[in-house]
Image (tube, rainbow, N blue to C red; front, side, top):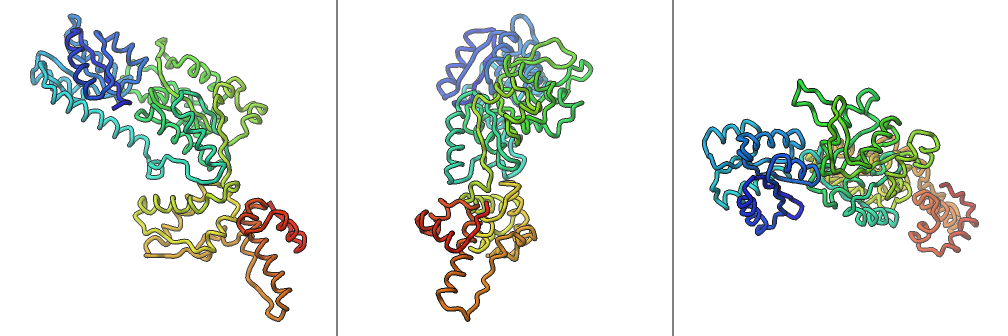
Amino acid sequence: MINNKILIVDDETDICDLISDILSENGYSVNSAFSKDEAIKVMENSGISLVITDIWMNDNEKEGFELLEWCKAYNALTPVLIMSGHGTIEYAMNAAKNGAYDFLEKPFNSDRLLFLVKKALQERDLKIKLMDSNNEWLKSNHIIGKSSKIKNVKNICIKVSKSNSRILISGPSGSGKETCARFIHSLSNRMNHPFVVAACASLSNQMVDQLLFGFNDNKNKNDAKSLFEQANNGTIYFNEICDLPVDTQAKLINVIQDQSFYKYGSNKKIKIDIRVIAGTSYDPNEAVKNGILREDLYYRLSVVPISIPSLNSRIEDINLLINTFMEVASKLFNKNKLIFADETYILLQSFNWKGNVRQLKNLIEWLLIMYGNEKNFQVEISHLPPEFKSNKDNEHKDNYDFNLPIKDARKIFEKKYLETQLIRFKGNIVQTSTFVGMDRSALHRKIKELDIKIEK
């Protein structure tokens, strides 16, 4: 209830005070307005979740319906409860026909008022969740990992979530930039409002401005809302911001500064309240140097810069990611969860994850499709797709010469063992020494003694 603001609109102060008292006592945050124009100003400057309006106000018997029409155009996710002292079936039918959530007759019953308010807000939240959850993966908008790098990212996200700061998230493709943005949104004061993704790479130069800003067409009142309007009171995430045309980047700066924009073909300024988060696979400084990211936009976006590490740089998170993705994907595909052999875990930890976390998700999906109908199936290396089985780690096979003295055999085993672990930890001496239980200086001596070449 804390995040739900309700706007009461009635030209009678007593009615506004009465409803405000009832709702406030039940934990709701309430604003009041005494005309359509005043209500519009409140909605343009506050995150309103529900509107309760009278029909006949200020000698205009249709002012409530006019406000209803405006609300539908401004944000279709905001339910409107219509109330009237002239309670007739005709009024109720007109309210429903015009898109009102429900009709409340004066004098109203406080229990019915609270029931309708609760029901309207619940349905609104459900619509937002459906918009925000195109698939099961998005339902777990949390950052997965126990490595120091990913813990640092998570801590930054938690700290900035309650602010309205603009954020620029950089990291290699597939590393989880959108997941990071969704995580911030899910912890913010905007969590009950939309999270809208502007996929810059898929927006054509001809359509990008129309999709972002919309256009005014007096002949068609049911035009699709612009992305900025859809994101009002919530968060808009610009995926691959460097792919946005430079001319449009200049217009975005104005939107960020003024929190307002103009539709094409209209002189009417539309005020919005949105948080802007952007992501890029490019190095932001290099993108500015190469002219694909405007420098002035870069400085406005990177109030809080966040860098997402590659999966190869946090291999200690791989097992946790595998288990988490298996839990989610098995439910999504209605398949049995798979068990991974220890050797398979080790191979996946040493694999070169060029596609990062997204590539790991795809692997889990593939395995479930192939083997998820079997119960208690154990994934061996032989069950992995060809690109995993051909990994260079597979070159280290257990071929031992049993005619050798134990001292020589031990050296061969130690060399193969340490080579495998160094590949597994991408040549990181600290991580390797911790895992094998050797002091770093001792490990360095052993590597030199066995003539092991470190590949990073």
